[in-house]
Structures are given as structure tokens and as C-alpha cells.
Amino acid sequence: MSGNGAEARAAGVRVLLVDDEAAFLETLRKRLARRGLAAEIAVSGEEALDVLARAPETDVVLLDVKMPGLGGIETLQRIKAAHPLVEVILLTGHATLEGAVDGMRLGAFDYLMKPCEMDDLLAKVFEAKARKIEQEGRAAGGGGMS
Image 1: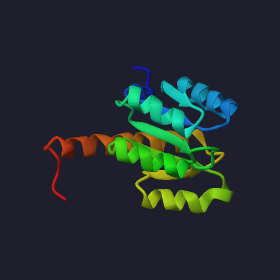
Image 2: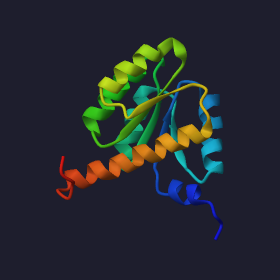
Image 3: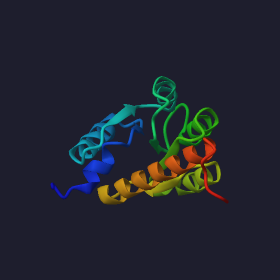
Image 4: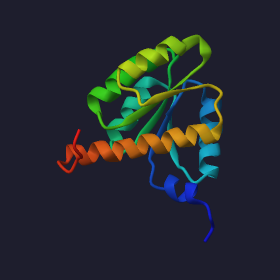
């Protein structure tokens, strides 16, 4: 046994990274790949919506709150309207913390402050994927009792 349960869990999670800072996206994608998690990237809210339209099987979106054009909160609203089971984790700097709190009210799974520890980010991604599986079960009629 390799003893790396995180890599085994990561293999089944489909992630979309959305941030207007291309260098940040590439760095994060590489760091996730080192832990066995492949991710798509989008440099704008508009591109994220296009990626989700082509890849609706995406499980978790890591979404920057502050972006030019279609901002993170607007993108979140559109994602939840078109793909209600996709879980969204907001990434925010302290200047946009209020936006992250608003995002939680609009259906975001959670938010993380940038920069964040990779272990914290991975834990949130796995929690979000677990919630998506639970929600899919409910949607399919096999869901639990609430």
C-alpha cells in the first residue's frame, strides 16, 4: 500500500479553478496535480461558465471573488442557477471578505482566505465533493431524511 489516501480520494474529484491571475491558476493547478488532483482552469467568470457548459460533470469550483468583468458573486449565482449541484468554494482576500459572506448566502459551499494552506484547500474540496454526492443521491430519490 502506498499509504496515500488523499491521492486516491483526489482522483475522483473534478475541479475547476477560476481566477483572473493566470500565474496563480497555473501554480495552484500544479500544486493540486502533485497531490493527484487534475483541474481545469478559467481566467474569467464568463470562461468558467463556458467550461461548465462543456463539462457539467465538474464537482467543485474554486472561484475568486474579485475579478474584472463578471465578478465572483455574479459567477456564483449563474453557476448555481445552471448547475445547482456543483459546489463552489470562494477564494478571497481580506478586502473582499464581505463578498465571501454574501456568497455563502447565495449558495457557496464555503470560502477560504488567500493565500491559504494547501491542506486546508484540499480538505474543503473533499468536503464539497462529499456534499455533492449527498445532494446527487437526494436528487436521484435515494436521499436521506431531512
